[in-house]
Length: 288
Figure 1 (tube, one colour):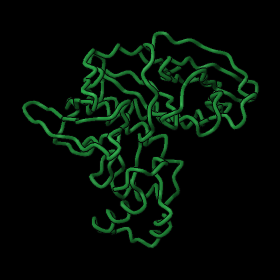
Figure 2 (spheres, one colour):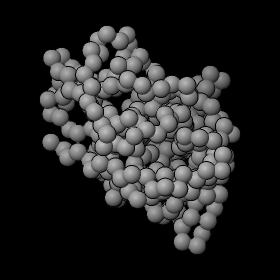
Figure 3 (tube, one colour):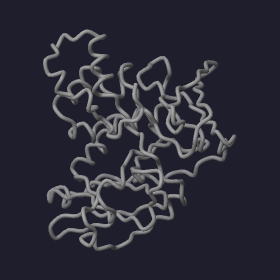
């Protein structure tokens, strides 16, 4: 599969999605695999993340006139709340992990210096506190929901991306829990699927969804080049595939033989393991 598609659910110029409009609903597994490989190879988390910053408890709210920035980065608040709903619906995957979202630069050279985030609508501006590493919490706000508010940053459009940030407390910084990754995927799919064309969205659904199908590989980004990723569950171990650029790995989200407590240990190309425990994240904001 091609690891270089930019959009999380993109088609290629060579294989436009409408080429599969005539596929019958009783599509065989082979034909569906071919359609997905040609048209829907996903990279849900292929963005290059910003380097880690200060702990989340160092959050500060900053006031900014977002109208002064041309084409500010924005996303519908109602759409993002679908991710909050998905977190609640799939909390069994990571019952001890709080929900946070994260802003990350769209390119490896991008930076988060000075970035701010607001809920914006007519006669409404609510600052969203950001941690130094770009992470934030998103509570329910009826006023913002009713006003159909947008999440707006002070950066130009397409310079930032977002992802769910699910970490069970107490794990080393270079260790990811498979249930956490599965929950991140469910949140991302809940938010992103409405942005897809009808054909793309339904091809994913026919395959079982990006978080449940062996036909769909979901890469997760890292901060530095990887040497190896190894999954461990009880006495069972396995090497996890790393993408060609060595900045992403592909966990077995769909494979029920690996339980949610499976741990993925990331070893970096520079020999580091970042073995210190990650700081606990703040408790999630309660729904209003």
